[in-house]
Amino acid sequence: MGTDFISIRDFSKKDIEGLFKKAGAMEKVLKASRRAETLSNRVVATLFFEPSTRTRLSFQVAATRLGAKVLDFGLLEATSVAKGETFTDTIRMIDGYADVLIVRHPLEGSARLAAQLAIHPVINAGDGGNQHPSQTLIDLYTIKKAKGKIAGLNVCLLGDLKHSRTMRSLLYGLSLFGAEINLAAPKGLEMDEDVVEEARDKFGAKIRKTSEMNLRDADVVYVCRIQKERFVDQYEAAKLQKEFRIDMEHLGGVKDDMIILHPLPKIDELDPRIDHTKHALYFEQARNGIPVRMAILTSALGRG
Ligand code: NCD
Image: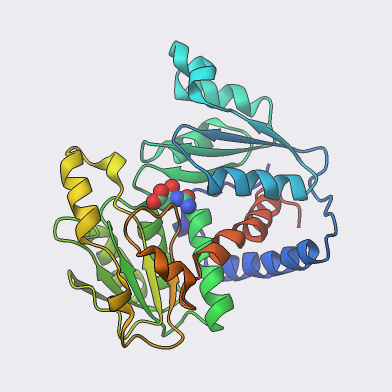
């Protein structure tokens, strides 16, 4: 009854290219202000057990633009979760109300569990520090649009690589497409070795690691915030947030057409003046969330 969307690992390069094509078509529909009624009479449920702005809203806008109705779970305090209802019961129940379930939860593996429980397709909107596949598609789509290719690009992933699901997913996606990757993290927040090994073993990915912030060779710099909600020690999180930050001087000597991406929200990790440089592409990246998520929804529901 449709396709689950749990991990970027579940998709081949060809699948992803197919989704990019669909997203491109969706962009044209949006530009022409035409309505796509592909999902009329469908109900799309959004269940967020963790905070979200872009992912929740852009999935909801994507669903609305496709003519679907949105069923939002709302704040947890207002639901039976506050009374102690289990995750499994909640999923089984919403599965009876909706045609597709978009789920974000702090526990790794929660989306896979939801997919096993639900008859309808489940889309992972972030499971703890593990995976965020729809964000990765947006990231790859944005890179491809800006640079015309992904293979051979020098991409620097910078920030809290230990706890960030966007980075884990993206490392896999970039490796699949043959980019050269530089992992730049503060000491102690490096990407888990098994994730790096997997990308090297499966794709022969060229991956280097550093704790320096050198952006000179990069075609793409992808930044994320320190994921403070996954720290035991909040003082340490605040300290690292201040230390590992891109200032205007880091942009001296970078490639003229280097682009900076960020899944957002950004906190202190980018000097706000960077927003006004030609390198900043993160708001466009967030906008690409709509057509890409329209493509994901139609394909999850087997509608084109
Ligand atoms: C990211 C997330 O939730 O993982 N946000 C998003 O979905 N755009 C990044 C983050 O919170 O740092």
